[in-house]
Length: 406
Ligand code: GLA
Image (cartoon, rainbow, N blue to C red; front, side, top):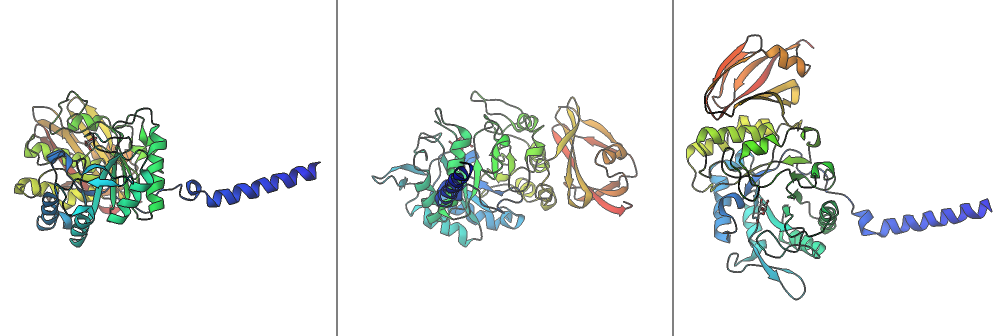
C-alpha cells in the first residue's frame, strides 16, 4: 500500500516536472536580470508635449540629447509616451499613427540607437491607454513581440481602464510576455501607487510609480490628484527599503525646465530626485532650454548622487516645519546631505555633524564638505556648519572622506 502510494507520488512529481519545464509561465516567470542597476536616466515626451508627439520631434530630441551633453551626462532612454498608437489590424497587430510616425517605430528606434541612445515606448495594462488609444489587454504577448522586433529597450506600462483587473497579475503577464519575446526591456510600472507596487513589484518591474502624476509646480494639487513635487516627496518617506539596484521607487518624471518654477526651485526638485535615487527622466523641451536649465540637468556631481552604485534611497532625518534634512548613503562610507527649505523665508541652518555621522555609524570618519551646486568645498565635519538656505531651495552637500580611522 505504502509502496504503491510512493510510486504514484513519484509519477505525479515527474509529470509536474515535465509540465513545469514545458509551461511558458514557469519557464519565463522572471524579469530580465542586470537591467537598471542604477536608476534609469533619459527623456520622456509626456510632461512637456502630452500626446502631441511625432517622428520629427523625437528625432530632434535624440539629436539634442547628444548636442546638449545630456547623453554624456548619463541620459540614455528616449521614451515616447501616450499618443503613438491608433488601432489594431485584423490580426491584432498594433497600428502606429501614420500621420505622426510615417516611417514607423522601427525606423525611429534605429535613429535613436544610431546616436548611442536607447529607445522606449508606452502602453497600458488595460484595454485603453489614458488617451483612449488601444492598450495591451489581451494582446500582451503579441505586443511584446512587436516591441522586441522594433528594437524597444524600455516599456512604460500604464494603468488606465483596468476595470477589475488585478494589478500584480496584469503586470506579471506583461513581464512574462517581454521575457518570452527575448529582448531585454526595462519594465516601468505606472500604476500610480494605488495597490502599493513596492510590496509586490520587485520581481516584476525595474521601477514603479509611487503616486499620481507630477505637476510643474512647488506644491499645487490638480483635480485629478496630480501634485507638485514637494507633495510627491512627502509620499516617499517610508518607501526607502523597497528601492535598490534593478527595482526603484519612481516618484515620476522631472518637470525641470517646463516653465512653472524658478531656477532655484528646479534645482531643489532635481536635487531631491537625486536624493531619492529616483529615475531621472527629463520631461522638458531639451531642444530649446536655457543654460540655467541645462546646467541643472547635466550637473555630473549631482547626478552621481542619484547614480551611486549602492543604490540607497535617501531618508528624511529632520523635519521642523519648512526645514528638512535628508541623508543618502553612498558607496565608500560617504554621504549626501540635502538641506531643504520649503518655506517662503530664508532659514539659518546649523549642522552638528557628529549627530548625523553617529546615526549612520560613521562617527570615526572625517569628511570634507563639497557643495554640489557651488562646485566647491565649504568646510569639514570636524566643525559646526552654518549656512543660509534661501526660500524654496536646497543646499546639497557631499561628505567626501578624508581620513578613515575605522
Ligand atoms: C497617465 C500617466 C502619465 C502619462 C499619461 C498618458 O496619467 O501617469 O505619466 O503616461 O497617463 O496618457
